[in-house]
Length: 208
Image (cartoon, rainbow, N blue to C red; front, side, top):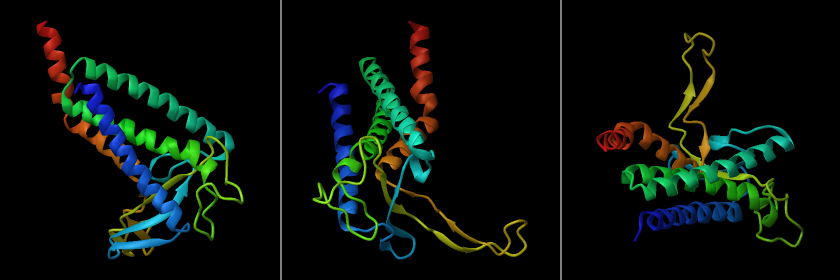
């Protein structure tokens, strides 16, 4: 099996895992509901956002459209780069990392592009797939489903901390999904092993 086919298979597997979990959350929980997994340290906590990884977003209708278009352009660029490095037989670690990033970007754009067209909203109700009462949005205006929450430390800053003394804080506060994890892991691998991924390639070209 070629590197391109292996990468495509890997992406499909990661996408299926991401979408199955999101659809299950969407069709079994209302917004704000949570399921404790490891006590208070790890919860499945259902929220939705309009935009970027870890709940960040661009405000307004046009912000949503611009973000979705940017994602589509980014996915095309990442896909082209993945095919290129597969053809050049780049280090497998680099190919794996780029495939992870591609799968993560694709996973979140699927939410944005299509969820608004196939689900009703999750406010005070569990959403339904293709509901009789109508869906909650249109193409490219869907919301991204997030559910992984790790509030490892939940407490108050000591009174002596300047500016924040006595205030409540949670670490780690962001709620994210599998697609966000794929992107984070892929980028982390590239940063950690960039010498192996890129310097070896540069040395090969120099020798040639």
